[in-house]
Amino acid sequence: MKRRNFLKNSTLTTAGMLSVPFLTSCQENSSKKLAGSDSSKTIRPIAICTWNFMNATAKAWEVLEKGGSSLDAVEQGVMVEEADINNETVGVGGRPDRDGRVTLDACIMDKDANCGAVLCLENIAHPISVARKVMEETPHVMLVGKGAEQFAYEQGFPKTNLLTEKAKKDWLEWKKNSQYETIINIENHDTIGMLAIDKDGDIAGACTTSGMAYKMAGRVGDSPIIGAGLFVDNAVGGATATGVGEEVVRTVGSFLIVELMRQGMSPQEACEEGVKRIMEKNKDRKDFQIGFIAINKKGETGGYCIHPGFSYRTYSEEGHTNNPSDSFLKA
Ligand code: SD4
Image 1 (cartoon, rainbow, N blue to C red):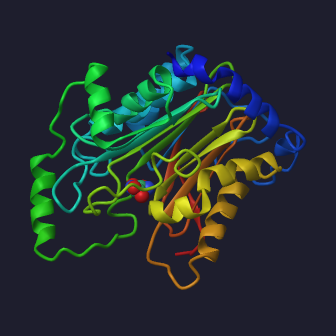
Image 2: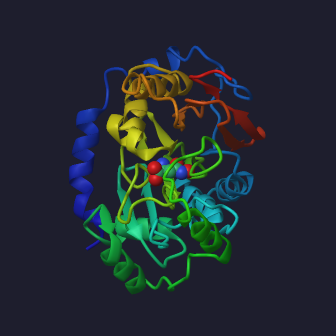
């Protein structure tokens, strides 16, 4: 049975319960205007993603420009990074766990609050597409490990070696010292989270990663967790995250940001508040990076991070820009 049909009634009911009283204030309270965006005007279609992934947003734009759905746009957009062996934090070429296994996490969410995720998936090059199949072809939201892999083969995905020679060499080098640490803006932070609005004004999002380099076997971060690494509410907007997933999970970061937008904050203000909540729980710790991006129903965007160095890419009919994000800890 298709998940869409299976859950149709219950998702509609939930959306109805969650929606309303503050919706209109989203626009009225948008005080900050971001580079390249005019807050008086609705900008869509539009695609945005974490970091400066120009090819990924260009692909998403190609879909949107032809009148394609935001769901197809985010899937096809992030697949570009999953296939790029030079991106060491996503898909093929991703850094392995400490035992040398590349395990991938991804999730996707559509305009109707349907969602799907795969966690700790091995040997499959495009976890985002498996996540979409989980959403569309099963009654479940998440599949993990061997079960997810088995499901992928059943759906026709080919077995692929994800560990490149370079990633293997780096891992063997790392094993000599076995230090488990993150280097801000350099290592572990090229996860792609993407949000898009299509010509009908519908929002979808996708997030995909190989997670933290040299993580413990079985470790999963925020990226495939709906509400943490990604959240979309078609009545309000969407948000997605990159960085140290444990901290994003603790505040259910992306859900929080969407809820803040529902209460009237602009995407920028909501991302700032999301980062502040994390820092309130980490008063003595400044050795990690997190970046959030968000979009609202009008196509206004925002991004904020802990440390300088994070940026997000926007692609719309107004052109494409790399937006340096303001940061909690100034340079
Ligand atoms: C994680 N949030 O697994 C991911 C890591 C990340 O770029 O963003 N990498 O915690």
